[in-house]
Image (cartoon, rainbow, N blue to C red; front, side, top):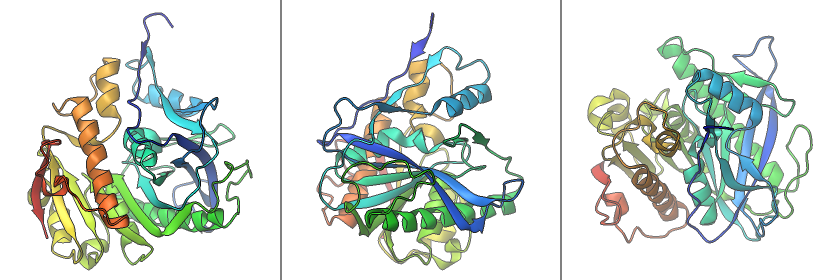
Length: 361
């Protein structure tokens, strides 16, 4: 393509190659609240895992073709000459042996499950299984195996947003149930497409965490509410919704904000939740950042030359390194029992000065 700009994502920093498999899941116990005509709730997810050998495997694209076309249409002509990246995730590569903690990821409103590939692949390379979830009509562009793409519905009011967060939380709990089935040797994919060799038996579902960005961060908190299998959660700059605000949580929960949103002081949902957190909890800040600095767009924007909003002034490589390290350090501490020797979760790491301590108990 003449005059095109090719975007690349930084590779993961850990020792394991990344394998991934896309799954189409159907929850026949729920009716999709947004779909017309009414139908069971359907999801697209990607299970990313440490691979045994990824050589010669196709790398999954950052977005599948139909979703990419829809995203570019959303941005008008701004992305016409931009070649979106491939990931570092090898499609259906055989899985490494061993039992590994499992993390669920929920993206922001009008964002896709791939929008945090930089963090997800890094976690996988250090030994986590990470399951990213698209929430149709709430995520940006959700492409299903038959090629049809579901787009975001408009957010109408606060009640609609609260309802959407509850639907997301139910999605995450359903996905967790499907992972139990998968780990026992079942195939939850609606088309029964083949699973990677060796994947079943590797998911340690006694060690489960959840994290999300923006509305996905709200979903992370909601999914932990009354759901003991999820041991720890991270909210990356998302207002909190639903009963969890008043009920609180008794398990570790990390909030990370930016100076723009100034969580505990500016967002009343954070301050209300904070008073009801009974387990380990902390609020950190990503300095010089804005709302989308937590996503791949912080890297894609500068490379593409497209002036994307809400990226802040933090250099992309510093934002990526700091968010990767913070999320991994938190889950290492609370799912693997590894101490935070670099004091990152205290906002006192010389290696990541962009992470600042705001409050904690």
